[in-house]
Image (cartoon, rainbow, N blue to C red; front, side, top):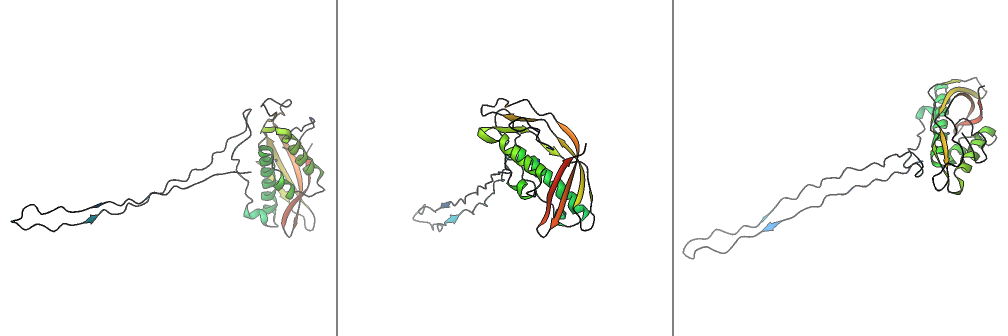
Length: 218
């Protein structure tokens, strides 16, 4: 993971969707009877009829399609990470789910340049966390954008000691990352894909979990 000045980004980690429904219209048709056919015979009474109303047929709601970034432009319709319910609990499972969520937000930030949620989930004194935020902002500055850099965390294990920050060990896999100039050309050499061990220290307070320390396992 690489920043504007070629520093390593560290362990790798929006949404715009449009939807609409077009309703069908009601169709109403009418017809009337004619004049008597023969004066010498009785004529049937003209009947006025109305066709039944058509049942409106709802049009399926289209979903915005996710498009990864490439040299032609930034990613589109990147799914917004959703915080699992278990991640709101002060438990081992909660710490693990929250840390996975934090890295999914980090991945989202690389793809979109939006670091608001990432900052909110990180302690202000988490140097590594704030370094990632700053590097992402730099990578997206002056009309640039990022392609690649998506993150996965296939293995996560938490240790929850009483009254102390929770230590979470996890595997972090990040795809190759490229920063593009406004014309689509590479801003610098791509950052190679990585597969590393990382550890996070998480603290649970009234509002939920916060990552207050992050580092690589050498």
